Length: 119
Image: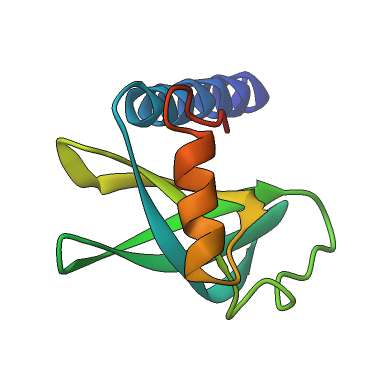
């Protein structure tokens, strides 16, 4: 019985996480996010990042699944952040798009002008 409750909890958590991300990707804005720290959590790692929108700083976090992960190699690096235009505090960092320079960011903006990247 406890196992069934736990599985249902995980399913609800996954569904609400996907809804949050879909909401962001439906109304995307883009920023450069810097990964500030990583923390080991159950069955994975959590990355904490910050980004700026219109001279305001926002913070977010993203969990990555897997056992025995080490996120220290990502800490200190910058990646593309997609945030919700009407609510910039809702965001998702996309580790597929590392940003090493302002030009990298501008190139990504041009690339995603008509179609934002998905998760």
